[in-house]
Image (cartoon, rainbow, N blue to C red; front, top):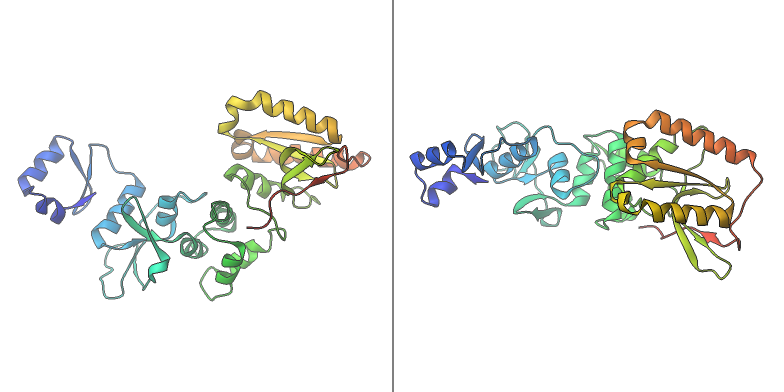
Length: 299
């Protein structure tokens, strides 16, 4: 994106800019900011244009979108500028950001992942913030301790941060995808079902890891496997692994797709509830050598 001033510095006059717009080489994004190409700007591009126009820092949902943090949608600008700057534009706020809380993504300044997570806590609900939290932890942009420390402050979203952190089992690794996070959230709707163990390892008699299960309830003899979009090409091998795990452990398996979790959540909760009830009625089942365990440690 280019401001009008930048285009003038590049040698384009007012008439030349108008010609470029008519030819589809440039398109106005907001007043005083142009983007390359003829396509109409998206909500994110309009928000980034405000960052460019104010020479500010993308914050909140806009920073989350630039960082590709899970769960967050952009509907309006959210820009931080220095206290000495004007904030007459909608979505612009004055505040001083320490250098360590600012990163650059594709040439655009935005708040760091941890700072973004703290800002989001005051803007989104518990469900969306948990999705963002797991994404930040998964990418190792922050640790649980980092987030807990940030939640001790008096920021507007501190209460939400502490409430969502309290839902995470002690020492649990981050979920490995947004789909896993969504399934963890749906599982809470099953009456009496405890939190699942994440990335649960099933071992054979020699102690070798034979499989890592997405989510498991060892005390019930139940596990869940999730098929995301990237699983389309490997569903045959996934089902072979599922058959092997069932043969080794005697556990029940529930398999759910992205569509099940995102488009049919109530039906998915009902299916998981039925599986949990069925598992509770069966005698305890254990891995072949009794050597199954949790995957990676806390992040």
